[in-house]
Image 1 (cartoon, one colour):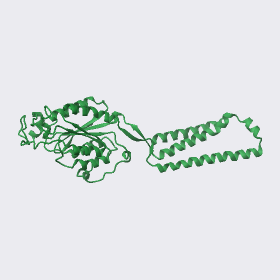
Image 2: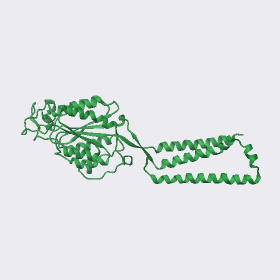
Image 3: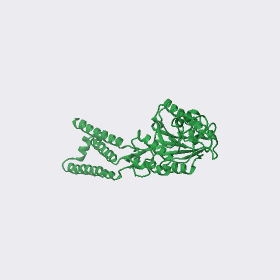
Image 4: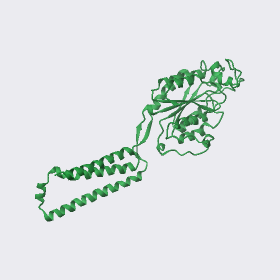
Length: 359
């Protein structure tokens, strides 16, 4: 157990002072009684029960006061967070290179299958959100327990130009901030790599239970750099788990008509089923920037994974729930100590009133 305001524990000295005053008064009364009465006669007249009746209300009151003093120091306990108190934001790369066929049928299809399986296997209470990013990051589905909505969104992902990994991390943190009061939203300054947001006291130590999972097959080409974004994420105690997906030898780009829908609709690509090689509208081939992804994960307390094929990616996603279950959180328990203090003090007053009326 730790304390946010440890100096407030000095108030416990008042309890010791009151206890000392009580003992002094008892001894003073005893000396007065000896002057005017027979000690043997007093002891014979007093039963054992009446002796502890005199002291119990005082003991309860002092214990209650001590509990309130401890509460004023804002004690915190480290507890395991139930899995249904956790939110997971999946940030999936939908840049054109995700159509590379080095992972059959293509990277995006395999990533969609893995994400869909992950969503389906999560306990019903876990909230999951979806962020898609190419040249910019977009919150497709806010954190929710509605699995059907998530799966439909994953199946409907379409490709775009560019790769904004840093922006995806910040957009994911904003999604967490919308449901977790301990996480402050990303400021405009931070989205450009500047600013120092204040972390709420509740998150001053440890990590929040919510996590971000970033899957990408390339390197950052748009917006804030991932390492700069990691500073804003780390200030909010949000862990980012990164996945570098694909081989180092990308193959021909082959997108389905559905995966091309977004770009074809915007006129960025010529449409059709096949996107050609390096000279196509998708831009040059990319491979995952593992070193940057490692730095992003390390700076935020997360972990980096490498997945070169569908089997490895499936294992990575299968491991993520265990990462969530192991998370612990600092919880303030001042209210519990205050409640115990009030209960003990109330019991002391009640007993004192009852026993003072007893014959």
